[in-house]
Image (cartoon, rainbow, N blue to C red; front, top):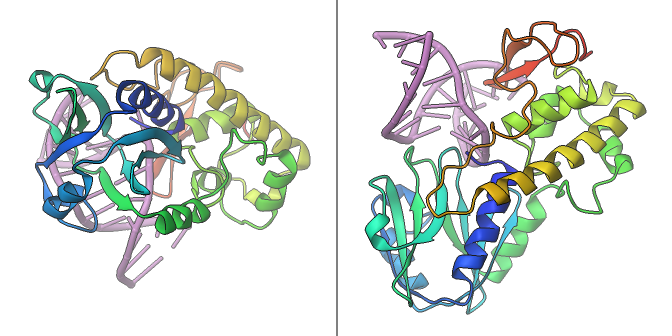
Length: 268
DNA sequence: CTGCCCCTGTAA
DNA sequence: TTACAGGGGCAG
């Protein structure tokens, strides 16, 4: 479900739907959803707080609450968030926060991998520090990317997935960026030429900007599934199918325990 | 660095 | 029945 574009779309919609509302009560169905405290303690800390705004940092959904607290929600693989009438809550909902207007924020998470945590101001800024650069920020420049790549021997794909360097890229968009830039996923980051770095940088920004737009427009209604494969995927999940540039069969290899799709002819 | 784990769902 | 799934934390 969510890489940067989908998380961004969720945050914007949640902001539209819930900013200014107050959380009246919070319910959880599983103890592992809340970290590090129990659902009970967690719910007690949330009750009565107003949601000032909802924004994104890396793949985290951040709800800024009154009293200088931040609710951090990580959707992991299958999480989703929306605001709706309690009557429409799905059976896979793992948490819901009743709002002062009778609607509720629903945290849907079939695979139970998602996590949430309450941060005080200090921890919120510490988290911000630990995370890498936002790829759509002005600070993310070709020179900066080149400098970081220089210091890493990781394969390019693994380098792009590392959230302490650049945030927001996941398995789909990392593969897409490498394909667009014609960079081999196994090439060590420090072996990339300046020209390849420039292409990679441009590809990351273009691809993500376009995907954010599509994801936001697509995520209009509460409870909709987040589908990134629908918009502009050129290599991901296309093993054996012809490369869109040269017709060579797309290959799949495992890197860091995950599938990487690439064109063995145009990416090297 | 890779491998395993957290979980459930779906498809081959 | 097995493999795999858009994430990430941890062990070895």
